[in-house]
Amino acid sequence: MLNRKILAAEVQRYLTLHLGENPANVALKKSPFAGISSSELAQQIDGRQRALKKIPEWLRHSGIYFPPKLNLEQSSSTLTGKYKSKLISPGCSLIDLTGGFGVDSFYFAAVAASVIHCEVNTALSEIVEHNFKTLALKNIVCLAQDGIASLRHATGTFDYIYLDPSRRVESRKVFRLQDCLPNVCDHQSLFFKKSDTIITKLAPLLDISLTLESLQHVASVYVLSVENDCKELLIVQQKGFTQEPTIHAVLLGKGETREFTFKSSVEKNLTLDYSAPQSYLYDPDVAITKSGAFKSVAVKFNVSKLEASTHLYTSSVLQSDFPGRKFKILETLHLKELKKMRDITQANVVAKNFPLKVEAIRKKYKIKDGGPQYLYFCTLASGNMVVVRCERLPEES
Image (tube, rainbow, N blue to C red; front, side, top):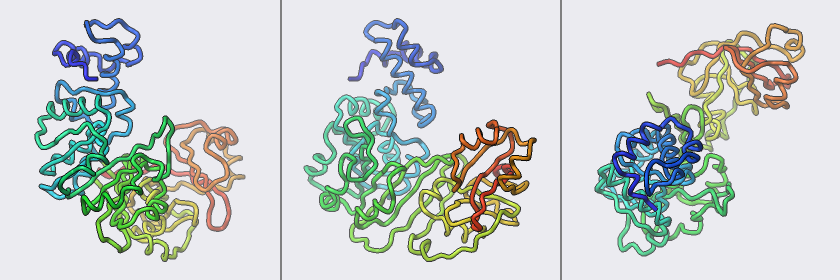
């Protein structure tokens, strides 16, 4: 439950002053405040540290209350939350069936006319309602109820239904759509009775093709990455939609957002010419690889793939707008040649379609981690396994 003594000005000042401390150390010390345990102070500091990385703008407001870290782990970040808010229409109505810590509802409320935040955990719902008041949001209603039950008993309809099913069931992580809670597949008829558009946030590890087989009326799939780290899958269903969905690989950044769109049928029918490493090497962003745009990205950016299962690309002329890391190739070596080169003792090692893992490669060739050079161990279309030695090119500002 929300301990309102933590909201006192002196406690808030204490939390600000001790923001850089290890929460575990704070939990072991005696609390300087009556009615507030050291573990509660540690929880608030831990929450602030996580918020500093995910939603720093919330920390501009004094009095934000943080729940246990388990409730924060699945919450969205500022970048992903703001992007999702662009998927809804201004002035709409939206119900968030699995509200959690409320980050997504917060950003939806910046666009929607009204948002309903459902959270079955009554203690968490109380915290979220307090935070929304602190953030001066007036168009959100918090319901401490099961979202499916709330939707079922709602008298009207909504422009959008949003849900983020839990991927942790009985303390274990699950990876199939049908195993998440709530089970999205079981409630399709209810969803489309109450709304024409359903937006579902899923874990990055879920298989996109299997998800599309499990759901009808999918209009769009979004793969969101931040700094080459896949954060979310978003599935948008539109009532009555029967065409092929569009897949969006979205690279979110503080400066700009890049988006690559394609359709699976086009990707499947493309044919590529493969090439040995030329002058430049390209390692695609994880949003590209997760979305499955292996051939489409090669055609779009005029680069050649090294091999069908080697998701690396090359060109003789630099393609500076390629969505991923770009390298200047110094040389391409066969494995026997690498053994003879005693000057390569430190490098950033990457393995792509190669039988050995990175740690095994380091041990075998006695290569320390770090430095400006990169060594890409990979397989070419010829079947030869090679090492591409290269230097990373700086990103354009």
